[in-house]
Amino acid sequence: MSGSGNVSAMRKVVQQLRLEASVTRVKVSQVAADLKQFCLQNAPLNPLLTGVSSSTNPFRPQKVCSFL
Image 1: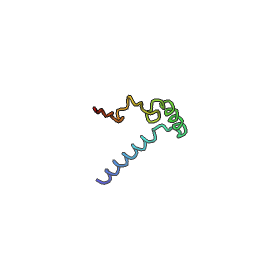
Image 2: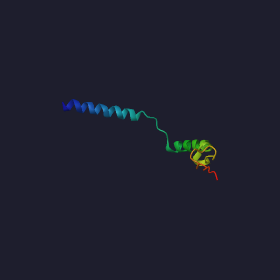
Image 3: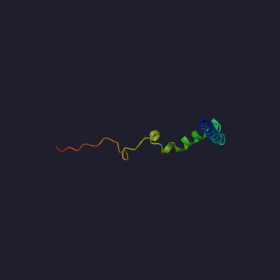
Image 4: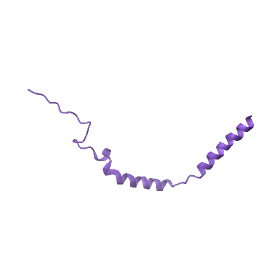
């Protein structure tokens, strides 16, 4: 029984290795350049970089209304 189990396990390993070998590789320098370009293109839309206007900010402190 252990022989057929071993063969089955090895087939799974070979299948995984074939899958990993078929993945297309991209150089890290190219990916870094693409990521930099994406970040620069989308910087105006990022509220962490541009801030949130006080009129549209749902977390702004609420004004207290008091009558004298």
